[in-house]
Amino acid sequence: MDNMNKDINSMPKKSLFSMQIDLKKFEKATDEEKKQQDVMSESVSFFKDGMRKLSRNPLAMGSLVVLILIIAAIFIVPHVVPYSYSQIITVNGKRDKSAANMAPFEYSDLEQEYMAEGGKVFPHIMGTDEMGRDYFVRVVYGTRVSLSVGFFAAMIVLIIGVLYGSISGYFGGKVDLVMMRIVDIIYSLPDMLMVVLLSVVLREILNVDSIPMLQKIGTNMISLFIVFGLLYWTGMARLVRGQILTIKQNEYVLAAKVSGAKSGRIIRKHILPNCVSVIIISAALQIPSAIFTESFLSFIGMGVQAPMPSLGSLANAARAGISVYPYKLVFPAVMICLITLAFNLLGDGLRDAFDPKLRR
Image 1 (spheres, rainbow, N blue to C red):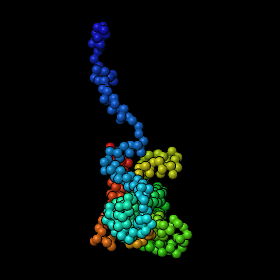
Image 2: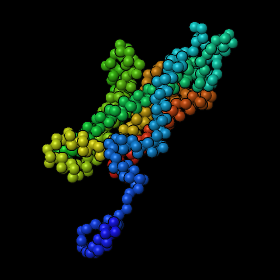
Image 3: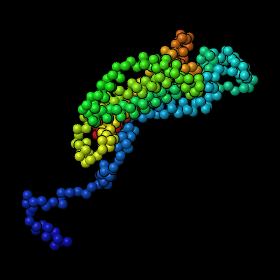
């Protein structure tokens, strides 16, 4: 050992221009630094990394929990509450006229007599409406209808808008010019007027009474879905087209073209993943927008047909007695606000989590 130390000390000093590494200047990595290196080198997918960032956003996760609870309630509550959305309160087969316009957790005369005899009555959590129907169940079914309209409209807008905008932005030139002029024409059409006209035309063409499903939702809702498919995708198409016009000039897209990749694969694998933030936020905001449109049409009598409720029709029915029964307007209005706020916050959280430009 002594001889080795003498040999090391007797070695000539290293030149300033030498590539030889001085091992004395290095230290061994600690266990904590090794663990940190393992975490830093972990390979994760794009979706997994985005979900990890989303889970660290408290507002987005809280909104997601609220939406999950609302969706779970609209499927579970109808199996728990013994009333249907169109059932008028009866006791022992007798219609209870005193059941109309009851306050929350209030019982009618016949129900009180039935309870005094030892019978059990499910509580009217939100009272009853003017026809003696349980208001809680009607709000639940109204939320189900409004959410269904929102999700269906968002899917239509997402599919048509992304496909149309991708083709227009990727190919550009005359193809883009013609397709965008079509979008401008469609964008100029008044959507509410189209809903009214289509509902009148479909009422004459379709035999609604012969189809139970159409009889439930009515021609007004069918016309609303058609209008979403014809008109409401233009905003999504413009956003996607603008993003693709910028992204397709990047080097990795040019490299994919040179390597012989087909246009469909380039759009699907290289371009659309970088547009995901715009697509997500637009689709998330489209759901509350569709719910507002449906609620407005139901409020003016152009939405879901009676006795099927929606949040808009419930608000319209509560408007007549707002000075006497204001709580009837509060319940559907609060539900609309909760759904809209939750989707907006969730959309912002998804944008922040999945936008490659915002990654740190």
